[in-house]
Image: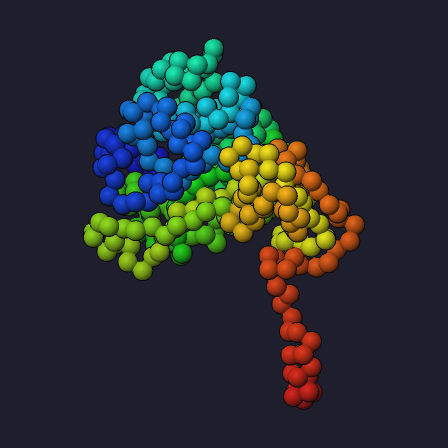
Length: 352
């Protein structure tokens, strides 16, 4: 039901982003200057049929091979096309013929607009639940992006598993989507409007964590999030009691990531060399790494920088030879009582 509803809603019900009834499929973030400049270069007809909920443009992608899952009319693909440059490439996959028609109609227009000798964008019709049926090379992509689309598919586990297989080691899935604070009741999941508005297919955030880790992404990192407003009274009434958030995550394909943040006494120093992030590099929502400062990190964060495309932009201090336990303020707290609390409890207890 999900794929048919998506094709109907985005191909026929909606004629443009102004037809949306909630702000779930809208991007509220103010784009950084480089992204805004690239966005201005996108054809107006492509922009008019944009239904994303975040900015899916991670740092350091010049020359990268990128896969866009649920590329729609192509806005993100054409923005990424400019930022990866002529040496990079963008492949968009979408299942809605009307959206693909808009995207492909403007391929040559964008090539000329960007001044490229040859186009670096390709669009493929396909279901992102069945990426295995498409002729996509395994272990090939540096970055996979998706913008408010995974919520629309039924078999979300297959999407995460396929993305893991298509990424290079050290690559990342960087995507925005809608999440709920609880599991959506079954009677709402097939509502065509709620589904098309990116709400009834939203993952409970705890289930997302489980699915991502099962696919091989051991340490999902939240980059940005915002609560969603539902201004349509009828939709709000159906979803009463459920809170929704739009969130952007980055999931690295890295061997050796641990289940939680472990402390090995390591630190990094950012060189300030990533375009657009010269003063501060934001790894996620709680790792804002200022250029030039020694910045303590856990073992997982170390690997996310040292074993990825970011390695040349950092200096690294320490290794994995000595373990100091859970990283302060980051990992799961030790479950046992403190020494003082344990001693007091012991004195008060009697053996039985």
